[in-house]
Image 1 (tube, helix red, strand yellow):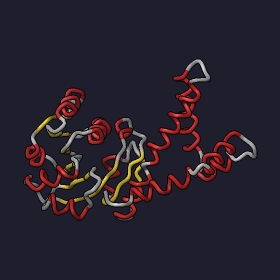
Image 2 (cartoon, helix red, strand yellow):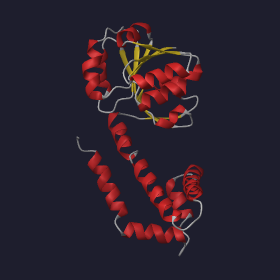
Image 3 (cartoon, helix red, strand yellow):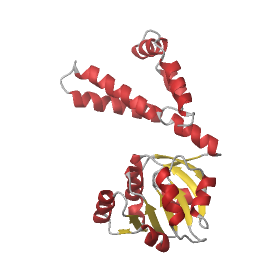
Image 4 (cartoon, one colour):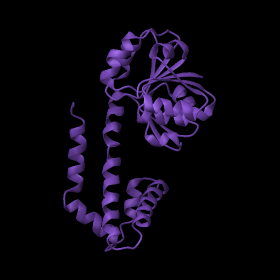
Length: 244
């Protein structure tokens, strides 16, 4: 496809890296110039253009702007009715996107993670499943949302990633004071948790498998739950549901 990318921040740049091997012609905007120049220098299929040149020459537009910037930039572009648009922006739903990019078609909202650059990454999406899967599904796992409310809930819940990473980091720091090779300890914990979660049918089954009476995992989990871990997590997630 002829793909235009408006905005080359962390996520949009990761998407470009992930799809650059697929034979597309990719135009990236001058915004985040350092990232754009790195992409163009790395991939022969990537070129830097102005926003309007990207709009003129692309069949599919990927929007990686901040929402507040998009509301000013997108209405100024001359788009075509045969163009499709995928947004990576939180805070702008498909209905508002349709207004901003008319007469182009607001096809999907996609929420990738930086790991999409390497592939084998989960991707949240709402909208045109076929288009999203054609673009990103070969190397990644696509999780389609049923409606905007479901996407909002997933966006809140995915924030547990930072919480989990912090807990692993802190456990690694505790371990580093007791072992010779701190880096090996951190690598072991990440390997253990990542592989265990992926191998289990679901999280509840993994917890049950680790629920040996009096075992280390059971004892620490009970201690953390009694210290208010679960209540704090639920309260934090519910707070994310409130308008910013």
